[in-house]
Length: 341
Image (tube, rainbow, N blue to C red; front, top):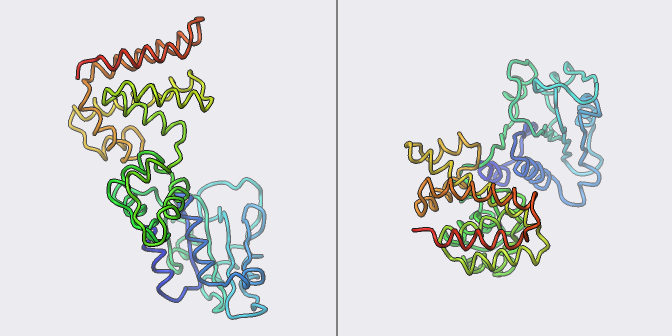
């Protein structure tokens, strides 16, 4: 997992070659940032940090930089972005790369340079000679989306890095309200940590007060209130959304998306599929499936299907009739609250 790689960076001397890639761009960027920060002081970065984009610059330019002695200090860092030649993809721009020169450098890297190859690639083409050679000689970090267990651990360790601790219930709540995007989570955890202060504890109550909610997450909270038949609280969330100038038709669309997920999870769970299997089939994060599994027990499959149909009808009414859009949603919330538990 990513944070193990980060600890390794902090705990030992850096190696001459790194390969950092993957679809979880936050972790890719964080790994590169930590490598740079570990190797160079803030003052050294002005002179000893060079960044090249292989979609614009031939890789041999970066190699020549790595072979040039640093002006001051002992180390320099060369970041090589978008090394498209390591993949099976075609580059946006036609840039000729001298891969023979790169191969020679990989075989004998400069002792005073740290070269970091980095790209947001799902996979590399390991059939290529240059890719095989680099993967063999470099320290490799593959930044993939975190699974549920890793996500909880990441939240905990992110809070610790900001000098705070976080309770288990708070971890679950921050993921429910802020989602699983690591950039958003990182910002929220920094804010929460500053609020509780050094050595403070982030609680579920703190999360409820401080975490910024996107429209999507507010829709999740609205669904949560509906699921638990809390009509007054559901209406209050809805009115808060209207106060924030959210369009009723967009709220209906997001509610439909949430309830469609609940229906699909219910149908698959009934057939015996587990959390990971459902996440894979529906192509959503396992944590979203976990939350859905906790809610579906309160509805029958038929009730969920009926709600999805209600929302489709509400969408149609909003687009084709003069009926007040706010009233359409209010009537739906009241109707759903009266369904048998």
